[in-house]
Image 1: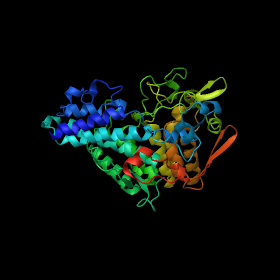
Image 2: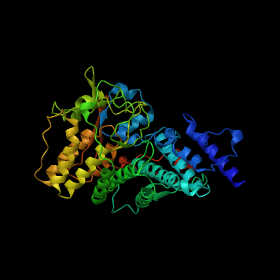
Image 3: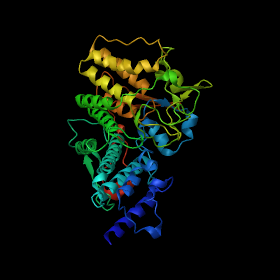
Image 4: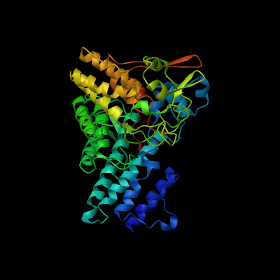
Length: 458
């Protein structure tokens, strides 16, 4: 009876969240009909099927930060044709959503948390043989990974940038650690949020295989990559360096851009070989095919032998649009990739004064982006010189990948790299200064009304 009541609540939640759309064969457990509602996950295969639900766990990652960052700009006419949330996020309005509206960046991320918690809650209830230990480990490690990346995405979107001096009091997000939908929802501190994320990922490391047969499934290499990304956001450069090094020791594959056809769409018919873990952003009308590349960034590609000009961008009658940032489903890709990890490693080495290795890692990436035989290795004379070059290339290499918002948040704390963002809509100028409280999006109204949690100050 307990399982029946529990699963009935689960099914009601899933129907409310609209997660049944797009389900595949591997989603059979959660795609049950009402007269099958007595079914509960009873085998590792049932739980593995939940983990393999790409439509829920690999898609619809938060895009509010990408809408609000400076990777692109939207024309007034394009902006006028968007919904309330996209328009307001683009100009950093204090009020972003229509009252009572669903906010997919919040609800879809917590849906991912819910799926992961279903697996973790039922793992100890299923019987398995010694020969299935590896599968058990992979299912548990994957669930911890998916919950962690969802929490991380949420805290990057709905909480202030991390500050070690105030993290014990700064509000993060609710840490839902059970699939019980009746459990009270309370915003944890940022310190507790990151501690939970990092602890779970360390546990996942010991459980996951070095690599996965499918890049939509977590692996040890992907987990090291995610840890490196998170440590960078926290300002833990030694930790980010160690995790980047461990990641590249398992997989250091880079794509030679000379082998790509810039006229193909998608440029990568399946997934880029650089991807360690594939995910994609929430769809919206601003970040996508009609977005135009920020002109300052585009003009920073000054070498005609830099193949990224042809691979990353498309000249549509004088409008410079994005070309290769979309996956085979036409979603904006937000993968963990080796290109990002090389840049993480190089940045951390430069900050540590290791100029030689910092520039070697940067050059190892860039040589794959140049016409064969034309690349001249970058050099630096000081740590600051190396860091400046690396951050410049990071800005160019990771366009429209969901990473820029976090980079703005963390780099704004350093006066050398802090910038004010500007928008021009209908000849009205909007600005977002460094370290502005609007770098944390508001918690959805529905959540505040339901739980009484405090709202972000904007």
